[in-house]
Image (cartoon, rainbow, N blue to C red):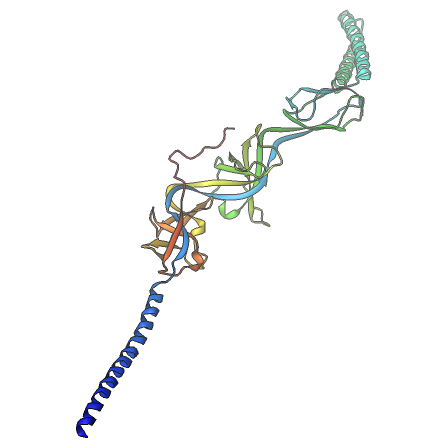
Length: 374
């Protein structure tokens, strides 16, 4: 019996030990496999997709920007100086005219008769005065009679000049050079004295008036460059200059008036509305970034820079701003890549995937633009 029991128990113990070994192996392998999967999930953090811009050098100007409408430097309402029927209309709307040019002719028959009448009166008195002067030398006429004839002659000559002036008023003339903006006269119309018949606008020089805050009164100077963009002509810019500065600050608004001038007789027309930029300081070839790269956070200005595939938040010092670009005085170097799209999903050290890079236009090496000639 002992021998039989020994042969039976030995295989059972071996099977039991094998089962225990497998169970221990399974217990030891289960937790480590799950740990590896969690570790792989932690290491496989998704990269944030962003767009970047390269820090590049640009020419930037410090400027005051405002909006205003263009106005003609000179404008004249041409009124009839006498009454009469319009016989001829010699100018039409849109026509360029010069100062003194005839625009219309009125019926001058009555004025012509008055000139003829006063001419005859002057001729009569001149003859009387000459005879009286000869008789006065012979002491046949008193000095008082001669003086009276001389005064009558002067009065007749003045009346003759008045009649000639009235006759000249029958020709309506342009008081200034410019373009006929409107007319309210046709041949055959009866024109009343002092009624407006033409409007002339001098488009050779246009002006725009800006109300500038008083804090910039020491920066704005006569002759400074002014750049104009008008809504009616998108994509085009026009240059002018500061022509006049009102030396008084308005106490109510805290502003002073600045008048900028632009050359006319081209695409610019009176009444156009546009945006003006008075450039009072220019910075040449300075590092610049798009304004869209700036983080919308209170306090110090900062941006995200892509370095070694990760986002790094960098505090910068900014300067002038123009046309959507911002000068960088400290914090970045030329060639750095700043994030301009996808910033909201970034954190310090976030891995990034750059899908596009914007390169700023190269800085111009030529001298700054000069104001347009007067």
